[in-house]
Length: 485
Image 1 (cartoon, rainbow, N blue to C red):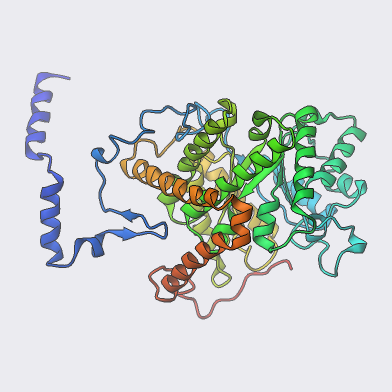
Image 2: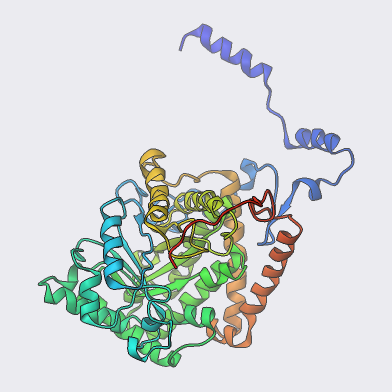
């Protein structure tokens, strides 16, 4: 740069001197003409966090996690040093069809068109441990794939290489029987379960939270969880076997802080139960994954995932786990409760924002719900639209080329710390009550969620919270899309 250019830059800087917060605040107060700053420009979130209109470097100078690098404790900036650069998030779209042959057609088609992992919801009968002929009418195929026999498994996974394709199996309270079928299928084909990778998403407390009941005793499900975890350690070392779902909380109207606190409390309960059954801490922790909902509050969702890794690192540190055990695995799913059956095409925009937030927050795998999810099973077209949200964010927006996109943002770093602190306080309150199961028994999480859900309902009813196409700008001549029932 020449001397003349430097002098020109100096003159430009002189023309635009920096302003202090106090000067900015004085000008804002003049514009408000007596209206209270806190009520007009400070937003109160459902996490009871005040969001200010501007943030400064001073807001993050004393935060304990600042200065940490991606891939290093406390893992706020991600569990991998290169983020998604080497291993992009898994495109793990749910395939919710009940018939094994129909499931197989959709799975093979989607894997050929960009999907990188199988995400398999199971039907009501399979989750209840019932054969189709013993299930109640309507339970077979309800909510997902029916897997009762080895023939069902062969039909569902025909032409799919389970040694190469990660699988997320939404197994409910116990995945033991289904894993036996899948392992038998692989061995019959001459394949090894050593190469089976993915996640058997066993979550008995999540099922209890969602349904209010379990098909068997919790003690029996913990015993099966320990058996499955021990089997995976010895026979499928790249397979996770324990899941903690935040979806019952978020779809019940809960906040990001509540979701984080309740899931961490559930994770601690599972750690203790598995330790009591003779599984080593690191074998347990490295087979646990968390499944979080991604809402439309963009920056809050980024902060939540970053805070989740921070809090879980602190938990595993307290238990004495190694560094690999402290690396939280995060699956994200776009939120369900805020999707609308009226003007469902608007859901495309909602899931795009939510997917963007989940990826920026550092999720490891992601499901983007098809826009017609509230009205029926997805069609080939709606599956394609949802899948392409991933592909556009990766191949056109290049979010697989950026490590921790939100890192260093004063606003995000500040609310990350606040969310982590509030979640830790609520988690400690659950611990004082004896853990997550006892808290559920006495109704503590339910009461917390009900209070937040009531505030949300009021916000929607008064249009403080806008749902375009539903409570704002509705299309009164709308025709519903064709669906699969």
